[in-house]
Image (tube, rainbow, N blue to C red):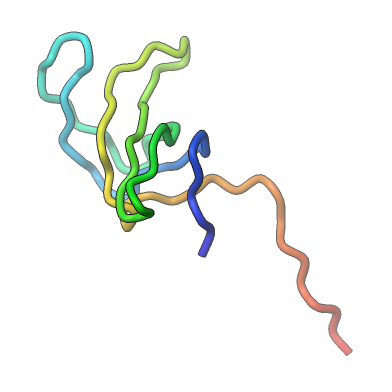
Length: 82
């Protein structure tokens, strides 16, 4: 399992209710929504910033670790077959 660190990009694995940061109205964060890790709470939960394409934050929520998937950029080398 990949350890999630501050400033990592992550996606959520299920729909989650949230509050819009500016309007304070309820919104739904959808499965697959991308966010940035801002704070780590003992690797049990993370404060995630959700922003639009212009970088404007629309939600900032604490999400349990089991609902986050880190984005991966590099492949893992496999052992050579003999």
